[in-house]
Length: 474
Image 1 (cartoon, rainbow, N blue to C red):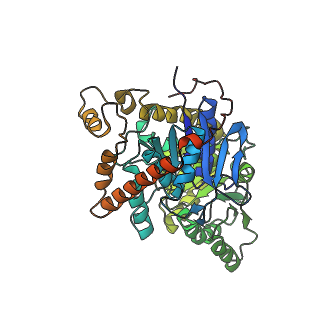
Image 2: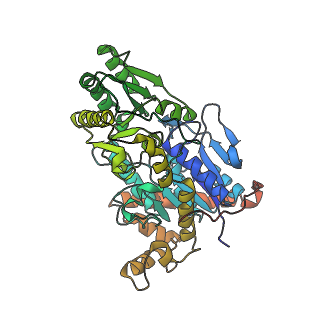
Image 3: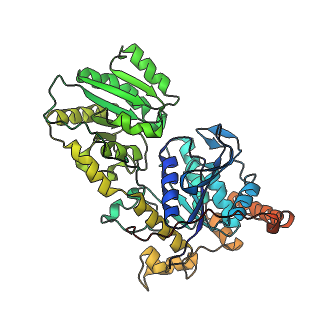
């Protein structure tokens, strides 16, 4: 019988804040619980959400009171999270700590503390960062620190770093195995799609929908510049924009300056359950993001029968088939041209958007991603062999290199000296700083073990587990 685990999902980003990372954590957690695992969520406190909460399916959420500094990310302290994290982990008898999101302080600190406590760790990357600005360079260095001592990384990128382990197999096209690891939340029922029985005439209104956080990295500046030109080139079009953020002021000013109040509808922030109702009002979904690892919302748009226009960045080109999308460079001129192509294709009835829902439904399944994530857990805990986990054959050079760094079982070593060796190679100065952090973290762990012994921490009773399901595809 396959083993079950006690898993802690850790991230700054979780409900009640809406978003792709938040949805991914929730959906993955519930499906893992359906497969017999115990899952808890550790995140920071939100307004009206503090302490311990229970969600559907008995999913327990710990809302830790920490200072939030920007976009729901907590203030980095490195060590102050350790005492309460240790208390939660011991109370819940956690085996695996699974961190999410590159910009989540809780995620990085939890992985560091979990390794110090001798727990298995997994990191899921939900973002892409270049080297064009100081913030991105700093984030990449932070990722280098975390990934130096993690058991496995689930990567959404088309081109993963060569040092990272191979993502789980299971898709027919191995080139798409990274990005398709994140599945989407499909509508509960087949949506009432705007299915054109005839070609859209020149006077029929085409509605373009945008649902996004209005931040720079989501391409809001690009959207602000492109909307007047799109509406000028195509008189019988209108926009519906849902979302909030600091860039919403720029959009409102653009609407006023160009007198577009009757052609651009700003809905502001909307609830998750309202997304489908907004999408089915449109014909085209416009996604102008400047950086994106996956883009869950574009899968939702296609599922609702919208023709997708999106920027060709990150993992987006791997998400949907080419007949559902029109790609554009993250530039104003190209975005305007791509949107024009999509409008022309719809008016000529060249795209069968009414078929998109059934096609997308067969591509994505949360049960499938739960099975593949479970396979990662089995690999890092030694429940399956190294060769089966990484896809190496006996005597393969790659197998020997991995065994040299991870041990013959393929499981990452917890020994302090081995951890320091991994961190020391992160840079001339950064490596020494990282090693110092690990040593201080280890001393703090010894202090907590001495002054707050485990015997004094009450163990929480488990929520009744579901019977294990083994029907998922691998």
